Image 1 (cartoon, one colour):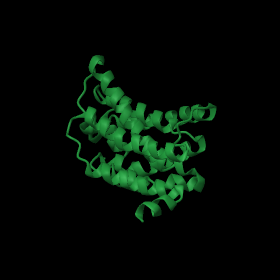
Image 2: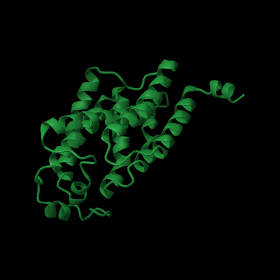
Image 3: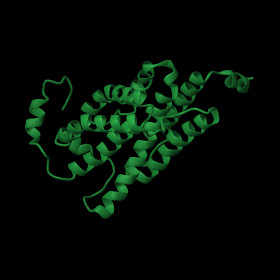
Length: 223
């Protein structure tokens, strides 16, 4: 009976149901501290394999497309978020949190770290902007409003400024990916942004931390 009811669900309901189950599983499946390799495998299984299998079985697209519009929007989004990473890398709260997994400026260590970090982001974008946005684009631009609360929830424990900005960032990335019919823009902006952030915090701040904190004191959150 349950299997028949599930088979009768329209694609939108199936995508949201699977998305909810995957999101809950991600929260409940513990990740050993300090293991980026485990995190990469963990996220790839939940966020790439399951949504990908669902999409393939239903002939649906999760935004794995690259065309001229996607490349143009990728460049524009990457340029837009770049200042946030550059300034954010000087914030004491950000510098005390990143890199989330141990690495160093030694390229022999940093490059494998960056590759695994990118896989984590590809998995996240396949889930949040793929399954829960581009994958349900039939409902229009409001598909970009499906995952912000869940995305913000999954950011709890990170620097306060990042938690507050996570939901608006999710909406921005979702809208750009929706218009592009591709998750490439958010993969590049998010993935290479985090790699750049990790690299920057391993070096002296680009801007005086006290000046950055003073400039952002108007924000109603801890800096």
